[in-house]
Amino acid sequence: MESIDGKIGGLGATIETKTSTLAAKLDAVTSHLTSRIDDGNEDCRKNIGAVQEQVRAFQVEVGRLYPSRTEFEARYNEIREDLRDIARGRGGDRGD
Amino acid sequence: MILYVDDNEIMIDWLRNVIEDAGYYYDAASDATIALYKLERLEYALVLIDIGLPDFPGDVLAERVKELAGDHGATPLVAVTGGEKLPPDRRHLFCDMLMKPFLPDDLKRVIHDFARPPVKDLHLTRPPAGMLPKGA
Image (cartoon, one colour):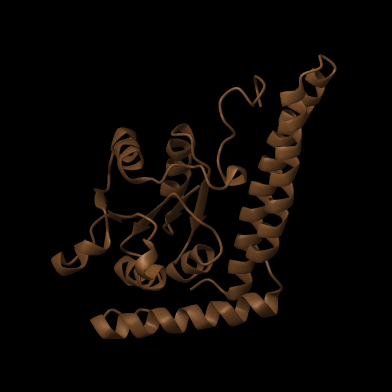
């Protein structure tokens, strides 16, 4: 069974990959839209605002998904207990 | 974004390509506990659950997801099975079932039929066509 340290590491890697991929795409979109502002395209200005809003929302979400080790470990163990209760009910516990 | 729950790294890599090709972002969890942890925090368009997970059977995870959703409508769940058998009385937990090995088109059909439209969280889905410059 993978250790909690391993799981935290895996979770972190997932988020880092997702964050960097998203950041690269957002950079490309922002750059593309910015380049068109000079043409007086007001829609581009609005779209940049929308993209920036999404970046802020994503940062908040990353904070929720990737908390401190203590928070993660506590919630991880609670979830495991919940699943173990269900598994006991159907005779399928493999949690240990 | 679509979540795939499996500890098989080969399958994870393969599904990533198909899911992204279908226009969704992709996330993975290696066991039921991590999957539930993620499901508490992110909204997914669809969750693919391998029945033979290392910590708990996939249908145990599905049952907990349904409990948490209550009357608000659960995230669509699709079972993925290899040699493992899903008991008939547990099939109601899933919208559909994919038997390994399956073809990319089988997965794309499931995504087309059951995945929720990626509209609520733009940052977790692909930007609309036309917003991205070529090559982005």
